[in-house]
Structures are given as C-alpha cells and as structure tokens.
Length: 415
Image (cartoon, rainbow, N blue to C red):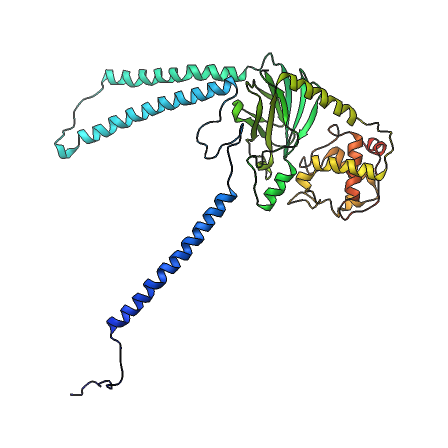
C-alpha cells in the first residue's frame, strides 16, 4: 500500500490552527482601527450637521423641537388651545376606559382559567348605556367647540379691514377700511433668503420667514382679513393668532384676529400652491397704536412720493437706479438677481423680448402678466414710473446693454 509523501524536514508548513490564529489576529487588529475611523467620521458629520442646523426659538414663530401649539397672543388662540387640551383629555379617558375593559375581559375570562362563556341576549341596560353615554360625550364636546367656532367666524365691527391676495408666490395687502385705508403693497420673501435656499446654506432663526414688506397692524384692535387669490388656492395662516383661512380664486372669504401683544409674528401659506410654496411666508408686525399711526403717516407719504408725474422725463442713470430697486423688491425672487430665471421662470438676461426694439412687448408683459398668472399683472400695483424704470433696468442690465430707455409717458401710453 502506497504511503503518503512526507514533507522535507527543512520545510515548515503552518498548521491550520496557527493559520487561523494569524488571520484572526490580523482581523482583530484592523477592526478597531476601521471602527475608530468610521466613528470619527460619524461624529464629525454629526457635529457639522448640528452646527449647520444650530438655530434658536423664533419669538412669534416656530421653536426648536416644538411639540405643542404656538404661544397664543389672541383670545381666540387661547380658546383653541384650551379646546385642544379638553378634547385630548376626553379622548384619553375614552381610550383608557375602552381598552382597559377590553384587556381586563381578555385577561379575566381566558380559557386557561376555566372561564365559561355566558349565555344571554338583548340587555336593555347595556343598549341604553352605549347609546346615552356617547350622546352625552358628543354634546359635551360640541358645546365648547361650537362656541369657539362661532367666535372665529364673527368678523363684524372690525377696526381695520385688510385684503390679503395670494399670488404665486407672494402676498398682496390692501387696507380697505379703518386707519391706513388706501395703503397697498406686495410682501415677498427676502431675496437673501432665497439665495441661501438656492445655495443650500440656511442661516438665521427666521430662515425663509423674512419678507421685504411685513403686514403692519395695531395692537388690541380687531383686524379683519379678507382673503382671495389671483391664480391658485392659497391659505393665510398665522399660528400665534389662531388664524388659517383659504384664499380661493374668484371667491372672497374672511377671518379676524385681535393681537394682545406687540411683536413680530410669522406664518406661511398653508395650501400647496406650486413649486414655490415654501417661499411664501407671512410676517405680521404688531405695533402700539401710536407707532401704528406713525407708520400709516410715513407710508402714505411714501406712496405720495412714489406717485410720480408720468410726464416727467428721466435720464438713463436715474431711471436704471429706480428700476433696480423695483426689480429687487418685486421681480428678483422669481427671475433671480442675476436675471437668469429658474425652472419654468424665463430668464431676462438675453431675452429676445427684453432686447427687442419694440418697447411695447416688454411693457405689455409687465402690465398684464404672463404664463396664465404665473407672472402677476403689475398694472395698478406699480406706478407707470416704476414700470418704465424696471423695464429700462432690464433692457440695460446684465448682458442686455441695449441702451434703450422707457419713459413713464411711454408706459402710460402702452397701458
């Protein structure tokens, strides 16, 4: 019978045990290093994320890790919070009672304990109980809820009436009655915040909540808000006031609030209204009565100064400077400060219509809007001087450099 070959004496062949030990030792030596590297990367990423997202509570706005409703500053909001807590207590008691009886019955009458099913039919007492008790619970919930809902809808005897019109994607405010009647302006997301969003670098406690023109109201006065929309459904919502009212195109709805504390309060459009929905904030500035009166006087003086004589002839530098201010306040959010546009928003830099020698083409779009309401009509919202200025600015900004100038009289004639 053949014998297996014998290895030479000088040749060392590691046994399987020694080989496995060496491999295991190598693995045990690498694993802590790899684990430490991964842990360091994880900790670094976590710290970087925490630093990037380091924000504080915003007075009048959202709070960090907020779980409860906003601190109320109106009587209605106080009632809403009380009603919320009241309903929560009732629902909790019902939950505990129903599931307590159910689990007790399952535990007490299980087969392993020798329980025998009862044989009964049509208990009048039980049927009356499960009819009367829910009825009483519903009545107990409905009475306080009805009181709050009726109060929320009572918009009579308002001190100031303001129309809030939703646009894609900004708010227009017109003071219809009361102190400040005749004032009107558009409130748009601050351009710097849009740029931070585009760059993916959020900063500040009021990120995406800062606007160029906040809504200003007096403290301790009943403010009626009439809502409507020019394009799609929006919703005007300020949680600290306990207010949320849809703004529907072709319809007029209203709500009200009476702020009991001076300060800044924030909200957002609460109806999904398109791709720029996140860039439609609401900022309400509540002032003392004296400060509000001063604001109204100053605003009316600004409006009077803005109502320029359309027959005045402007030189190019002054009109471009005026147009740049109008553009940054009303157009830069959509068309971007560099005029490049974004997504379906057409760029103005290099636009054939803007560069066209026929000035009426650009004026018609600014006057009447475009894109089925995607761009609002600025006729009536901007003066003819402002429209002429912004068109002149667009025709001479960025790479356009047409050298064309549009005078207010030309804008008025085009309208």
